[in-house]
Length: 164
Image 1 (cartoon, rainbow, N blue to C red):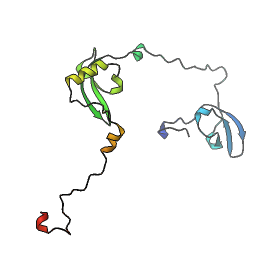
Image 2 (image 1 turned 120 degrees about the vertical axis):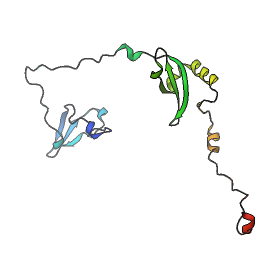
Image 3 (image 1 turned 90 degrees about the horizontal axis):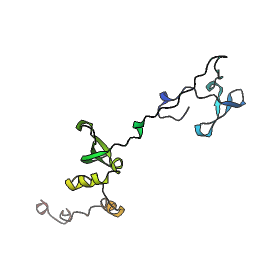
Image 4 (image 1 turned 180 degrees about the horizontal axis):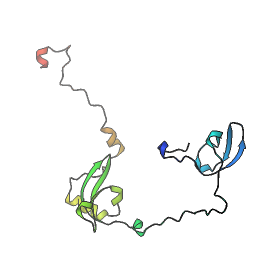
């Protein structure tokens, strides 16, 4: 079985491979290193390859067509808002040439080509969420144990009237 996130999405049979050794129960296949599966399999897991019938045309897959739109980089018109989502800074981006309903939440890494737009957003919205620049010691100090509350008296040394 190939390594796949879903068993039902794996291919039932994979390309024909050369058999290098046959025993009554198992066969050894000559597999490419990229497959990352064990080359020795049970005979019930293999079947003979039946190529195309003589004279039957073999169709070759056509090359993949890549449209020019795939290389297109969208321009940031302005940033509407920012928030932290799953520990990641995101911006609500209004794209140049697009309508208001086509705004999208984008991770900060997707707008790093527009630093002036980000700078303008924070000048206009100084309290908006932004990426934290915290050292490791600052981060660790957030989790130091809280000192014992000294205002609570120990029952052994005070009476009930003075503790209330």
